[in-house]
Length: 455
Ligand code: FCB
Image (tube, rainbow, N blue to C red; front, side, top):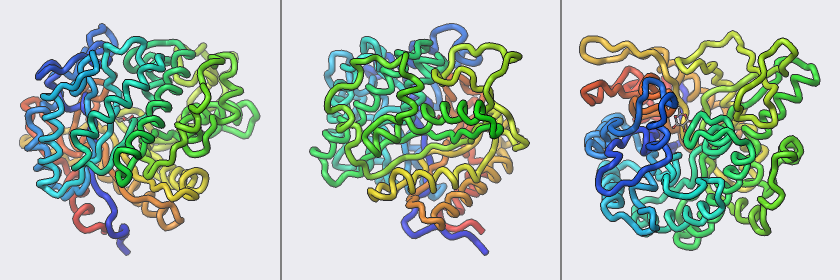
């Protein structure tokens, strides 16, 4: 028996500005923290950067045609804030024009534009980045300027992509821009990101009551390696910051009690001001879910090396234990059933009661693709990854989770942050000549998008 998705289910793919656009200095675009970070030696594999990327800034008509050819009805992209706004807060009309043309092109091909306002390329000129509360205020101005220009055509607005990455991974682990290793800064960044989200949802709701508004969070469910109290506790501490730290204030209006206790010594006493949590918990229409894997942890023992800078400031003793699961080229374990469990947990614990829908805004895998002489990649490993996870999504729907769409990460191979171009996540191959060549996974996905069924 085939698997059939509900009518109206969204099938599409996702990208982000810095990862594909290139044109990093064209038409008045200013530096983002990623432009700056990439210039620092040793931060990015092979010294790669986003200066050229997939040249999407110039090749967007071809890329939109590709989406249409692949039967996708939705396209999630992000806007580069320093492309559309000058450091002095004024609008850069040429930058705005690019997104306006992109949106028109999508609509001309019957593809719904799904706009993410922030996928990590913060203007470098903002003092203190996300550690500064004023950055959240500037974000609202930027969001409203964007909406002024595109609100008549873009009906789905996501504030932030994966604020855990833009705070803990960026300010505590130092792996992403701006590359700080200061856990207190990470907590400040996390709170200010959430504030930027909440204030923006409030402002957009007033400007556009009918728009669909939301945020995208990344979830990596965290399990203990054994029943020992130490392992159970370390997995809980990772879970508190990695998975509950953002959804809990958004859905329930408070930070997780255990995270507050775990981070007590690091939490600035004046960080959360009156009204902040009310703003952060402003109702949303859609929760975007990014899922790649699950992790098992044990507590470090005397034989383990001390951890370096960590994205888990309350769990520096977390040691990942690998299971007997297939791995992607990122070294991430493939666990499709983790997605089913996650969706059911989110629906039951956070979103179901308020009617907030769930959409998978990212899911996919990097593999060591081998192209034939025509540039074609027969990526059966990626097909199996997608099939497994989409089957899990379908099971979650059957178990009652309100899941409304699935957007594959990513449309095409692109700049994979600290990993540079070495890791390929696309269902479409991008080669050295910037040729776009759909892989076997793209054809498989197109068939699903057209029929709504997995045969
Ligand atoms: C997510 C990011 C996305 C991409 C995938 C692989 O964390 O949102 O840009 O890098 O991972």
